[in-house]
Image (cartoon, rainbow over all chains, first blue to last red; front, side, top):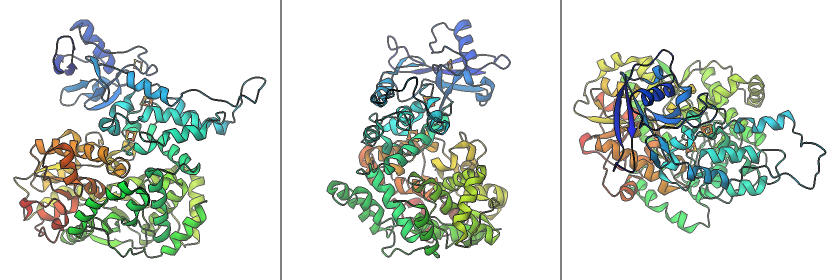
Length: 313
Length: 286
Ligand code: SF4
Ligand code: SF4
Ligand code: FES
């Protein structure tokens, strides 16, 4: 089998390159086993991170055939395609050497969401602060994160905008925002609703797809968006977009694509509204603009009834 | 072959050529369609950001409409399809939710029984109809044309709900392109996000994303792109002049809807397929 591994030593190389290692995979070896054996028997200069070898410490994530995963949790035979596997360092982070990347910005973004509990100090419980099982379930999934950065590595939004907080921080934020013992829910939710927060995620699903635990960031981000709307933190394009969208379906059963962008931008957001003009004109020229007269679906009244019944507030 | 057609809002709004090309392609392939005119918007994953039960109820109502017709659902929008699969999954794994939703649907005379199959046109063509049969119907082979598939997130992720065999390495669109006589273009961006969901919130980010994928496709020699999701089309076609500005070069890449590409190979005229409605019109299809 060919292990095609990306190499880079900043002291010698001007840019990363691939080096092929021929290697027979021992029976039931993990990808990490193979990388170790290649290092120990073929090339001691090959550099990668690892520690626990049992999917707990989160240090061995690498990109395999283009998608990030934990090398110690992956059977090597499963990732061989046509006798070959391509291994690269994680994305969205600078390379330090070979497969080792710089987590600096990653940790800085985790710190930014204040990953610690802020309890109500006026209450002085005798022992610990109790939680009901139901309350615990709200934060259980988010707490399973092992900080491997697989999600961060494959996040499409980070790829084009390093200002985005990223899936790991937002999943961690959910764990504290939905903690029944934390008293900073409102200010925390406000902070992650700003630029670079929950509304800068595209829903692409890469993070949850790559996540080796139950933390599944996209699910956490979606629940944070629900919380933000429920708390009334709606003075931003993302939340206005949700409101306008749901209102439109509640009204006619179908999306009114003419009204949606205008209401999302906000009626007083002049520069935002102006930015809609070029695309509007372009689409009109091709008669690609949505019909001016918005036609409801058949039986729209039944859909309105469902919305009235289930939509509170 | 007969399906309950779910058009979705975009095929009735900003991408009406998707609707008309679907109808023409289906006629030509003898696939009969019963349009669900009383079905509501799938919610595009946005309704569930306000209220999950509401989103599941609206989709369960659509499933019930198809069940009453005794037909499986045909989606022509990748996003609608992904959202429906998610609703189906939530409803089927949680009996309490199913009961709650059916109570809501009852006053409208609907009941979801969990029987209907939800399919996307892509799978209907590749699996139900079959590539061999499509090959027989091709009258105007796409030979000489290099076509870049753009899958769209909702068709491939989450992988456990995807209909494709290997969602991290799918071949369905490539196989279809080959059956039509064209040559599929392989490029990294084909499984990535188009950026559309947040073009309102972060236009620069959304268009940079799109520009990155389209440039790769172009570098690999693509003459055009084909996508099974009209929302991807909306970011890649109408915004292309702005994408050009961000990446600093003219892409001029036509972005076709799936039934348009199939329609061309079946010998349907480009104009009838609505190719003139796109912002980026292609000389190759004149
Ligand atoms: S779903 Fe959002 S957070 Fe997750 S990878 Fe995509 S853009 Fe990033
Ligand atoms: S959320 Fe999942 S993928 Fe992301 S760092 Fe935590 S465990 Fe890894
Ligand atoms: S070595 Fe610890 S997670 Fe792989």
